[in-house]
Image (tube, rainbow, N blue to C red; front, side, top):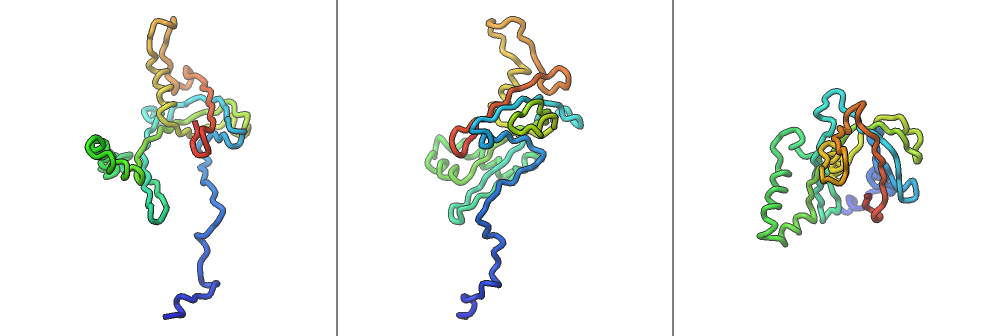
Length: 194
């Protein structure tokens, strides 16, 4: 029994003990990274329609993160609701939202180890990118959250407040009548981009 705990070094696998962690990057995604340009990344792109299905020019994807505090590891999964399947992740989020007023301490504790969110994805044509010039003229998939989605929705359904004349609706996903967007990504702190 003692020999089991004294295994020779050459039989112990070190495959998962890599000290250098590199972020996996999907080459199809457009990911403006402010780290490569002194904390502020600027580019110009145009949203383009999904030619296979114009109704999916803006695709919404739900994901969840589950943190194991004992193992100090997390896992990120796609929510089954993306494929219109029953989802315990969606159910858990709904229950936590309803339970917050009654049991805020329990909900906060669960939310420290669990979160569910959504992101939008659209194709973009990159017209100018001074930081990575090789991206100019390329079509990539752009992932964005509510702030950018609100800008898109405001272009489609502008508010008429009487201050501006000739307020007109613009479909950013229209191939010919869309418009260019200035993308500015900055660092809020070490972990978060704005």
